[in-house]
Image (cartoon, rainbow, N blue to C red; front, side):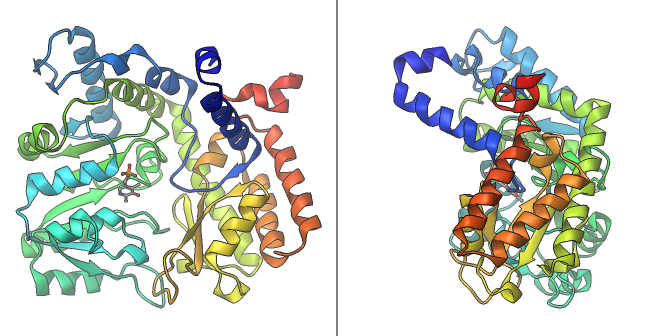
Length: 422
Ligand SMILES: *Cc1c(COP(=O)(O)O)cnc(C)c1O
């Protein structure tokens, strides 16, 4: 980064600090991951200079001979990875992609079924103050109060009562596997379209650990930067009969020029995900999450739904006598990053909710396994049980840094001891 260093020392300094934060801390935010150096090179390449409104072979600007090759390769690899009939790799990110899907497949005011935000849904699944909630008539479904799981009979009841035009499944804070086939059955009973938002679990689906909705659902969206470990962005997969509507909704419906530098990064990430070691990665991510969940549970943490089938764990801290916000802040102090989160039926407000959400995609990318998950569970317990003990917090912080030195972050290898002494 010598160019930034010479030209803009302030930004250089902030990026340097962030590099150290990432290398020296434990990242447990379940939507985050470390993308490869190759993906980052693509995003920092001259492709950022190009404008290419339109689609391969049908552009509104000249000079597309290389861009078309890149976008077509991204599409081919995505199709191979997920077995999709049609793929659009142009969405800037998950939220615009979801907006485009609604724009393509619904009329304003149409009724849609989506999981309520504080039960694990995403803001774009009908939060009343979001565009989705204002433009469409979202009917929220909930998780069961006892089991913490989606009650499919309740979904069926709501579907028959409200006759939605679309049913949305796939979430941001739901630790359990999703019954895609049952959703499709229910949708068929009432003539609804099916939309799966696999932003969180796409990498686990690509790696074969979780079942894919692609064979059953009309349209599937995923971000490319979470478990899929690619650049920030998204893609939409759909049945061939919706291809034209989806493409038009993205461009010119909602977006202008695609981000070609990011799309090259997507192509690289899809090739990485097609390799056999990505299967190992996704399996280990879930193994780690299950192991971490068990050890948290053994230490008296109250897990929503009792555990996890995925990369993600949701903890209700009520029995520990602290809030999600307090936990997040204290853990930040020791270099452990996770996020405060509402739990289903939360009595507290989103800015200071009862729970925390954590996950294993990032630590697994660093090569951490079950043994490290036990250490992390112990740290969480020690911090949460001793919030005011500054000496203890300082000691944990040192241990965190020490462990991190042995597990290099891709692209930041020179900041870890393993490679320094190697
Ligand atoms: C992360 C996420 C999104 C949105 O992604 P952005 O890229 O942040 O806009 C959409 N849906 C779900 C379920 C998500 O978890």
